Image (cartoon, rainbow, N blue to C red; front, side, top):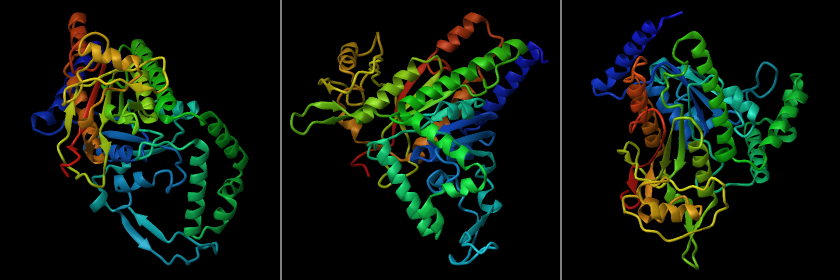
Length: 443
């Protein structure tokens, strides 16, 4: 068992290694750890997986997707984004038969070390997880060091389909893809026949039904996030208890920022009524507000990144990311339903921070009383960001947090440690940032 002095020396050496890239003018690197990315098949989540794999060579990325057995619906975007489809491809006629006399795969692919050697694909884990189902969440988050939560029930237009319509749409898409690939059995009778032929059809169908019942009428934005927070808290408590028994640092301490929530700019949380001109909180803003409130009420050190509107069609990739920490934190923990937002004034660069005491207290009280995500900010609503630039910023922040946390030695006095943990930009507490790269009209 390592002594306290040995642990202190190991920590000091690790801190020096983490700080070395920054001293050379390069982004700091994360130490060896496992980071789970929720919503890994989305526009932002897939880009986050790509950036972490390529910029942090010691990190294992656990990509959480809804269906790990379906490459088209489950992880098609993720596969493309991380570069898994850039290998050596062998094409064959679509009507060619395999050894069993059935239509085989029209294409096969091999890993190309010359192209994919630096993509970090060997450190990518794809895990199936229904974020609204407790058992799945506990299974995939029981041994991770950090979570980047990008999952959302809303589409690119900030709209959410009811569960029944979403399931119907997915069923139609599966049937169409099966016909396209000449898999007539799957198209006519569904994919259940294959599972039954494996001897586990009934059990698999029962599990699918349990997950479906548990997830119905819930969203990944709120209920899924709450399950993830509970799983992370249990993991932290278990590791802290183990560290107390062994006398060493808690496993997972190497990831100094356990939770990053990718939220949305406050300005996107309301719409203007065309008749009255009043601002009305929309469902998108309501769900994001409740999600942020759940995270802030937890004991987990975290960072909320409020992204501007995602645009990967008109906005160029590779622009400098602009960051503002002058945000309004005005949520109603009781979860009141969306309602009209009163007019309020704020600086053009963003509202001043107001969470309880301090800041623009009057504006915050008015906004909180109305259940508002924020106040009217027309300029902020026009901000845009490319998903890869947002992902690059997230990967950079994770490295900076790890390098910064390495500067606080384990053997510091209690008073000094408390001062360190309470400092601005430290490991503890809650921070919220709004990020964007350009404003509509600049592109």
